[in-house]
Length: 273
Length: 180
Image (cartoon, rainbow over all chains, first blue to last red; front, side, top):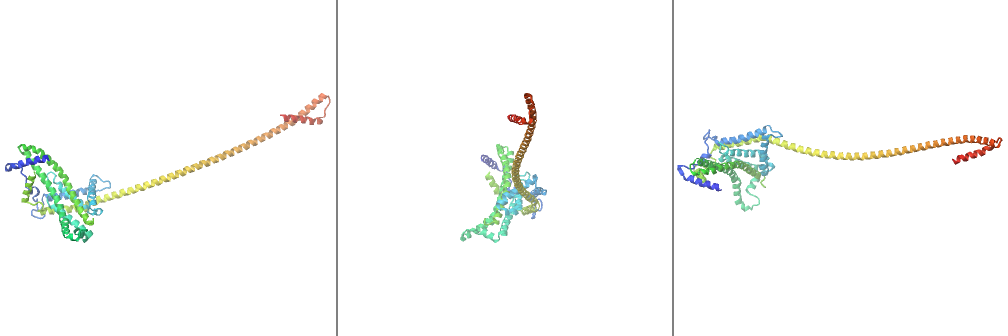
């Protein structure tokens, strides 16, 4: 905390130098918006986020394909890692959140977790430094999919009883449904997917901004001729520490997104629980 | 630092609203990529891994059951072995007892036969001795009778009647034989 305070004070001084020098942070649209490589203005405009999304599809697909291509009873190293990954999704997400009935959603949840994770990892991959999910497109699409999935699962397995359970929770006095039902509509069908998307997006965007901030600080402080150059000794370790932290965040956010999606599907599958 | 981040956010707010997905291309490629990955994992990549995992689990279960069955069988074999061993031991005991009894009977029979044979031999030898003695007595009685009559005839100077003296001589010889 002392280090952060000292850094904050140094930044204040640097910022006060104004136009003649100091820290020049790039505008936010410079660090999250990317020009299209082709198809500009079209619905299929392909930019850096599109490329990362494609890589986030290709990398897990190749990994699982190579692992499962010549799968044997006695697994090799790659197969062992892949099976451990599947076991993780099964044991930590599917079974606790949905139960044995949820095994049919294992491919979707595995795809979801790995797609988000690989997309997030581009935050800390040198030369990329841009998590795909720091843009709202990916999280919004996945949250919408989660909404469609859990509503669809609820309707498929429980019919209109699912909507009745969701909108008119049992045990609540009838008069209170005037208040409770709108709240349930909001919380279940709007806030759930919105919070899913915003949680992932905001965490990745915040981490991205944090890394950009400390990168800019480190570069600026290293190049300054003032005594504040000593502050670079703080900003660079912080940059390294936050980079390591973002490794964890990248995985954690992917796990949380997949887990919450599974929880929502589980609650739709067994609404009385 | 917080104030700077605030300034950043303020600048950002002037330019774009990051919460709103404003790039259709990004949404398009996200949808293509994610559903592509989902389909690939669902129909291509995961089935062999899940199948192998199930096969391994089934094999492990079968192996465990086989091991359990083998253990039960081993236990059964051990019990059978113990039973057979105890029966063999009992049978061996019986055989030893029978052998001992047979041996005792045979030994008793042999002893009895030997004793009978000894008794028979002894009886035969006694009879033989008695016969020899009787023969010797008869021979001695004749010799003694003749010697005594001759000696007495010399003493008295006349021939004695052998027939009349024979009873006395026989009585003397019998007494001598009895004294021995």
